[in-house]
Length: 186
Image 1 (cartoon, rainbow, N blue to C red):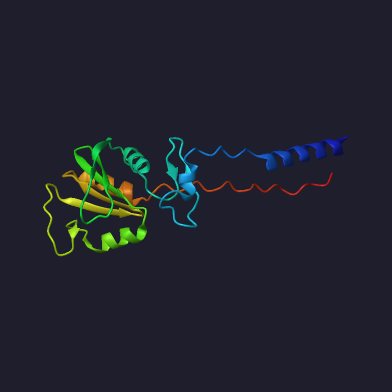
Image 2: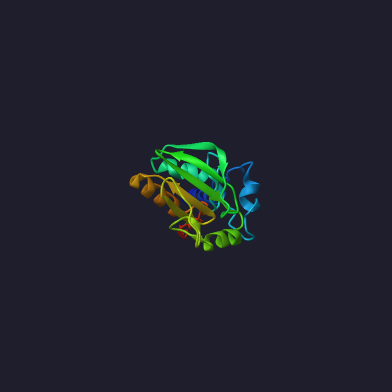
């Protein structure tokens, strides 16, 4: 009888290990995660956060806002887009404390590299030119994102830089298979 109990227990353990939990249902935006606009061929498929924001290693407006808020900053999206002749894409402006974060999300990393290469990133203007800013800008680049921070607050500048330079949210690693110990003979 004890052999039958051991075999039954081993069968239950094996069924539990192999059955595991089912993968969560795909989010409606999962197509955008795997191969949406700007997703390079062979890019990781990514995961989706509970709020619906894809985590695939690329910055998106939702992931930037979330990261800034998790850094302890109060963030509000401004209604108008931001445009500069030296950046190929329009940006989104966020009011952050007593400052502003202007974020430019690129789908084309080649275009992003060309835009940044042509800039004096200290002056945040095309090389060899001068642009007047009301507040000294701070230029930050991370992955597919360019940010111009406009603030007089050193603390806000540092928090913003650190939050962005930490990188875009990465996909959750796939669960690893659990190895069962070898079965003992009765």
